[in-house]
Length: 593
Image 1 (cartoon, rainbow, N blue to C red):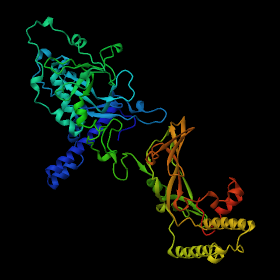
Image 2: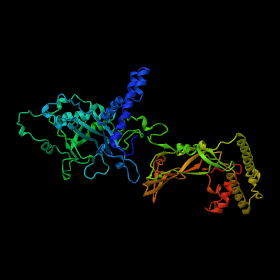
Image 3: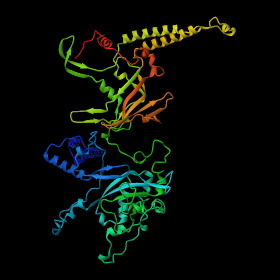
Image 4: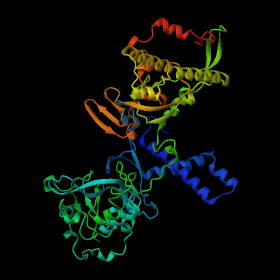
């Protein structure tokens, strides 16, 4: 929880408190201290010294974090900690963008005693200034279905990395490969770990040139970067050839990993190779590097999960299958949420709708006085068709915005018994008996006339119905069906099935409506203006759902004319007199206002 006028640094401090509390709880569970020590460890700090100590710990943890703007498979930019949260909000919707936080390697320890007096004022002695930031994106080679220039395409995927490397200028190329391989172990499938732990090929690392030349004859890093090996799309060494030491090659590329960061666009270079040797590294602070995986790793991991036989496992929104993701307790995941961290179920909304409320000053029409009353919303009869309107637009004194919260609603089996008004056993028994007698009488009336087999074989037409009698029979059947449905009290069936959803796409000021409908053949279809698509039932439940249309399960095969006299009113609805009579019809109830 952060103040709405806070900064990203306040977000990191709040996150540091959560992580520190989790680490402390895990440590206490492992050590199993006695009751006194455990109580002392969990209590809130009372003295100013304890608070200052904790604040210093939180500040140090926040120093080792970075907030980034992540796109599909790559890091777009690092967000400064001084950015204010109101400046990040969407002016139209009032929502904050999704930002990711990376935990960085800790800064090297700063020893003030080892600092010489001659360099007391040099900024280079600051550990933070001696660290470099590197943005890494994973890239794999895929076979395209319709090739234009080359049958292979190189695309970024998976989880990108943000590294803070200390003393980057003194590292060699092979040491940079070692650092990258170490950090990749947490974001790749298990089958790829054997490539990242390969340490037996160190003899293959080329030796650096002996340092016998004069200082002035050495090339600068800028000059070395201009002579790096270019890589084209059809170059064999992109993802093939001999398997590298760690199963990948590093190349300098743009943020999105589509082209080289050094070469001009007309060179068609997809990234200059970072040599894996014992020479000084050619990587600089702020570079974007792509990790080009070899085909051997791609085959060993089944395309990093894209070619698995299990349809429930795969790459979704840049995440690699097989990588263990730890969900924090604050994410709210569980069976109720169905995989959505911030989901609200429709049952939760119904419970909130029917929750009892207290009214301190309510006027009672019988008591003729103001009294403390309680109000509880419940349903006495359930309609054949239920329309639920989700509140998607919020208007307050200070802002107006669209609510994009995910509401998880059932496609089949919505149970409304949770908000039904309770009925006494006597009333239920009486009503059940009356309904049973009525159904029995209706069944007796509707029983067809029996005809003997001899009469049917002899072709006796004494019982053959005339046109008038046929029409009368059909009218009677329609009246009996309508009467039977009108006799339903709306309390015998409480399960509903979804048959239509209206979706609102866009913002508060402008948007577009589409509809998902379940056809008579049971297939769900998406209606977007003149375009119609077949969809799966699981695609109906999303955060754009606005209106939900449910049908009671026992009337799935009925028509509207079985419940309402559509020919007589034709959409006019109730008159004011009928509405007033309906409201004041129950004289045994008092009116609260």
